[in-house]
Image 1 (cartoon, rainbow, N blue to C red):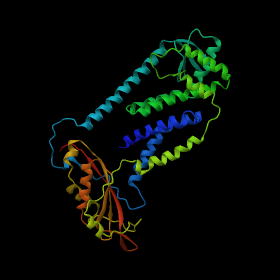
Image 2 (spheres, rainbow, N blue to C red):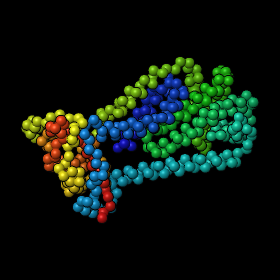
Image 3 (cartoon, rainbow, N blue to C red):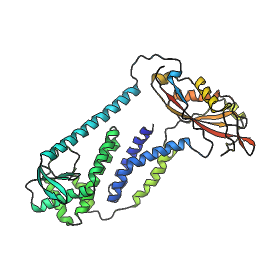
Image 4 (spheres, one colour):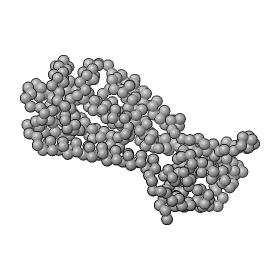
Length: 400
């Protein structure tokens, strides 16, 4: 679920970047915004997960309580793969294919460097002759038969890529693309990183070259542009139209970046999370009769299962039955159950904070509905209602 949320948020960020930052934002700010996107989204997902299980109220964390298939009545399966299994296989195959593709690209790149004709050293970088203009790490490729002016501009542009370490950005983008190969937003993000590299290199070249001469040079290069048939992970001169527009845009707004904190808060909001809110199914008349006080924060003595934690663990192990449908679908995961322990020790207001599937969620609710009275929490030597949240991990262990 966390990986699913990560990719949904990635798509949102990619579209927001194209809408608000690509044309109006500051070029250098945009580079760090793009590179920090995967890390930022990982933090958002982790914070969401933390907010699901933490509060100022008494929270019971019992990660060691696991309900495994081997503890239940055996179910002999036919050995056929479920939809979930095929989905995992399809994803792993995609990762392997993209890993192989990128590995081949780097092998071809190293072969190209090894077989290319060395021309000279330019500001500490090796310059090789090729049929295209590009750069990678500490290597520059330039075409032959260039005029001195053309060669100087190309070397300045490609050296800007090397000086700003754009190759590291591209390698990072390839890794993220391999992991999230199925996400269209990742391809938009990767293309924006490469486009931003050209903006940054142009900006550095323009510090020593007139805007008119450089624009004219780009136009001439575009007319004679040769495609990189190997499609190697190189920095090259492309995206002409957007680059010329960028170079001639003098005002760059920082106001668009104000959307970032708003977007972060929105992503951390519970309304964006696919959590189920399954309330305890008791008759309406019974709900009206029940009088449950509001849970007390930070009680002096926490509520507990009669007999202690080991007794509670034994109760769950004996009572919980792994749902047959979930076993057939090979579904597993951690379900977070929330309940209020009243002043009398009754287990009430049961709901699923974060579920796994409808069958496991229903089983968790059923077990808590049948739970015997607990020892209530105490505050100032008086029994009080308290909130508990308990994660139960349903795992498909091996048959014993």
